[in-house]
Length: 225
Image (cartoon, rainbow, N blue to C red; front, side, top):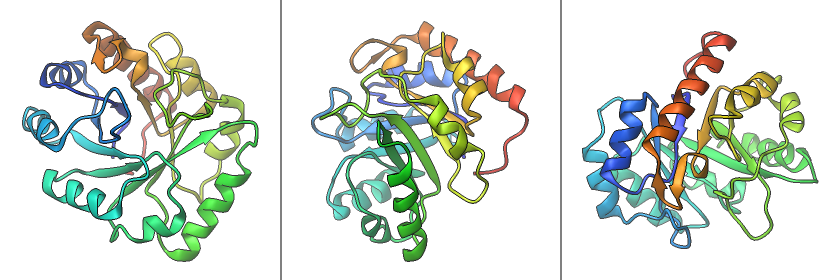
């Protein structure tokens, strides 16, 4: 589905910088408490400025299912990113729409993730992708903190689970090392390419995409996800 995603896009100018850099996915944040939150109207203007093959991801945190479905359908998004405390049953209410479930990795490790995914499998609503971010108390993402790469390597090596998307403190300076250690199918960054919260640096985006693309290419081709 994608290999390099730039999340938290808030303007047409930033979206166009992402396109020029060669990323293949953008994230539109609909969480009202985030400094990167956009309204559906803002999101529509951004989407209209994107090429048709750009993957458009809507990020939601503990939102009502009806709001998620309405936003996804009206904006013709490609993927729902759940970044809150949504239980497995919540995914079952999304009507089969593709989901990337975010997990915040802390001291508890991946045990709770395994349990969550087993429950999803039992309910027939496994997410298409699993994104891993750093755990910061009271925060739902965009913190700039680095995820525990060593803990994720074991997950990435498993073949019978949703493919791993790596997030959490990724920048142009560390993304190649992160990819080398974790072997994700894709990477995702937001604050790591910003000049200020919600404002992307075109230069930082270009540097990140170039470094990530080279490192992902060294892993070899990726199957369609």
